[in-house]
Image 1 (tube, chains in turn cyan, blue):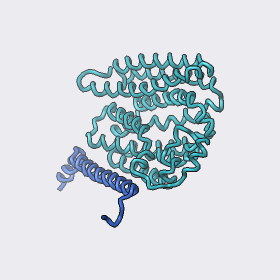
Image 2: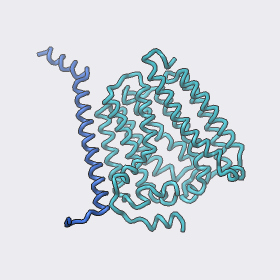
Image 3: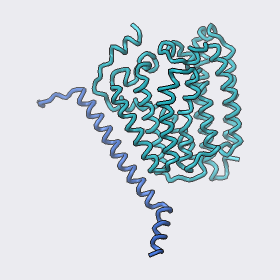
Image 4: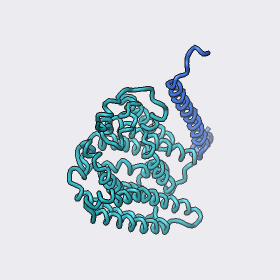
Length: 313
Length: 55
């Protein structure tokens, strides 16, 4: 019995629990949204009242969660086929697609309006655009159409620090664009490393991942190229206003580690990877998670130390 | 013996209602907090002083 037949059989809808509705908001993705948006807010050169800052991060998180619910509503058919996503609330039959759509739309409107009231319309406009980008541009259009889906779709996940910055300053500036670019460039090698070892998932779902359309060799080359570009950007950011000695040290160490990992992925072939059950690919994927948290943590640390005469240049 | 037997379904429903109740209470507290911060910030008081000066 395949996963697909298992999930088609379990489309009954029971009474969903609170946790099932919460799972629609993709809580794990939300942690990244909350963290990067918070760093964007803290790194901004304008102080924000803690209550306003808390509200801003909360509404950005709710907006991000709402886009996750709308993504699950739209992608329920392919989620049911992929092992990684088959237990999500809609394919597992706990929540109906209509409920997910209603929750997603309601929370989107709520988050945008409340972010505008709590902070400003620039931040709210960016949040609205992020939701639109993730749901319409990425989920509905690019994801099933082009193998560059991850590259362009990664922009949606890159907006939160920019929204956090805008919530504090009311503007978009070079520093917030750099934080956006950092996540934007990080997303492709992060997801392609995952696609290499979750090999059958995307094939079965018919999602045109690079591994499916251009082959696994091309994916390994792409990971290396994007990692080189990412390293240049991440280290270069260290010399700007959001950087500083701490950030630069973190960036140099982690980018060297990430580059070594990308080169090792590039030098391997499928026979080697299957022999050790994709150990290197899995290691680089895990490293990529620490990579992003460490970079943004360092930006936050630079901003946090600045009032005491440390941090920044 | 109660008329209606407690079912797992009722527990789930209760959990859902409790969760929503907590969220709504939190929202009320947050909106109240935001209102206090917005009303007591500098921009607001400057405007009040300016209009007071014209009278």
